[in-house]
Image (cartoon, one colour):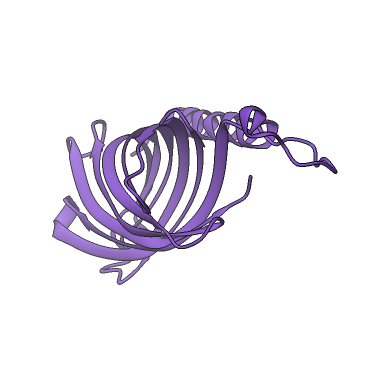
Length: 190
């Protein structure tokens, strides 16, 4: 049985991470001005929001789940930034096993024409629902990953592929891993 105090602790941490990243994303916005910004004074950050479809293989019973993912990227023009993402693997369930993850962390990117390869290192909380809703558990999740975005226009880009390896070190039955890919669209907010 999962300790309710530990589950509550993980939820508070994930909410704290999400709050800090949301405040950061909102605070980097600038006031609208009637005049054009000079190129030397142009903002040195970009905030993107996106959504996509995900497919993951869970080590627990070698299950393959599908779901949706939402993310926010706050990037600087100096190649470093942060990413926050939520993933809900609710489709193609076997015995009602499903997973939700809420992660945040650092991101490194660079531009090659319209392509933007990136690498990321995320950490957060994962909610795991065991077969037939027997129990649920909240666990620490560590997730390195990499991907490729393709810019369609100034405001829109395609997340061509996002690969992520998730490590659940404190899972109930021993450490668990999951791997998956995501593809979707991004929109530049700022």
